Image (cartoon, rainbow, N blue to C red; front, side, top):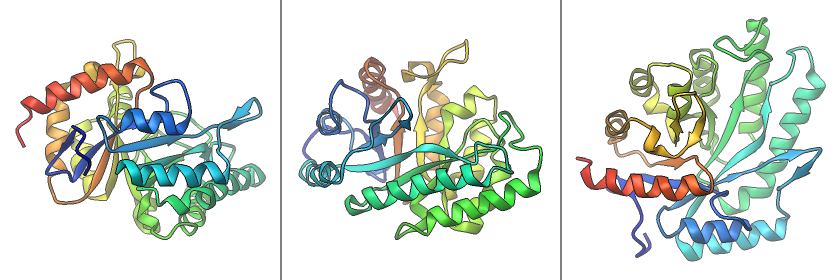
Length: 270
């Protein structure tokens, strides 16, 4: 671990991270900024008809050198939701899978700590699909195909979103994936956060933390996240397993969140 005053818990088995959108600039500039306080960067990718931030192979190689120099790790947030289309639209699903495979090929040389994957349906809300049996079959197939593209399937982490995660957990376990426990999303969508954290923590490799305002706006600074709840979630991670908790906030919300976490860390009893 670097000499920088980085925030972590449980004797560094729970390391804190931030996103690649905390300062204007390149991935490298964001990585250097993050390295002062945390030890992991979530590389948030997008790829739309309007634009893309997917880097070239040379940029990824240089980023890998800098990760080593700064004693940092990274995780990769895929730029597309898989299965966020009508269940009958196989062509679109394959396009999404193919993009994920392109991303794993591009970034695997720098050995990401995790890959964040959205497995959703054509319906937003608690139930992901009107055709659940077909959805489960196709989602399992997508998960297996993407997981097969990396050395360690457990580094692929299915994120808790608005759908009830009970529909996904069997697929996650059967395919050898892990969970990205987004406790901000659990708050936003009125799920029992601590109950689900207890249920899924053994399967969890990544945790996403962000504030949720009273009007349900999320991904804001973590002064909007209940500190007693955060403390109880962190205590569940004290099992010796290495995890990263990403403060999934951006720009000015990041610096505010770092200040909150430093004060929280000072009062936290491990």
